[in-house]
Length: 327
Image 1 (cartoon, rainbow, N blue to C red):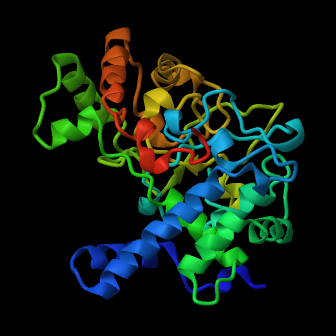
Image 2: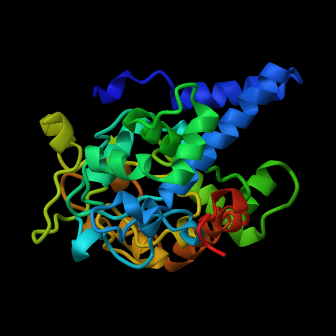
């Protein structure tokens, strides 16, 4: 089976949903229902530990809704049989605005990205044939297939598309920052000072309103000699990509700790201390990191005050993203 050959794509699903919402025709209503059903198919898969080798670990085990689908319990990922990964679990939010995925951009397709955790030795540790066997044998998933597909079949491409439909729907737009941006509230003075400092010192990488970029850069973190990670170089084998990592979104940053690709910092104050202390930066740091210069305590507190406004009040409790297996 060629995984890359499926016809349903996450982009196509979202476009179909938007078109369907603009019309009341029977055909469009059916399209909306199929989009919703595909997302539900993906939601059940996302929280199903049966997709893992020892039936202990689901996508939702590491990507926890209360933490904006990051993982606050461990510095790096952990999976089946007690195995430990090498990188911090990234938050899942606004993925439809990303052009590549994972810390090193190893995947450029949201559906294909799911292959990595499903089959990763230190994550879910399964194989695609085994995943297909288990899912195809489930009466619940057979019902989803009957509602979605004319041939009623469950295939690996359809499993991956369903996961992408769910994860691609996770959206964060309900923060104090969003309310301020919409003119509904005004920031307090320290939050406004923090925003001004952020725009001056940080927005070169973390671009509003997503507070991320689809670029890779080095923030100059000293190499962890016990767990060395060359970053995007592993994918491209280009020397200029050594120690470069994806610029993550800062939305919900207050609840998506720990921080950095290896989870070495647990508190925002540690992050600001690092960025605001040039002597801590390795020689390979991006010039924009060096240009931040020294931050005093007052500046750090103001920036953190602003970062707290990026916390979404709806996402952690949105029923659309909730584990369907919970009572």
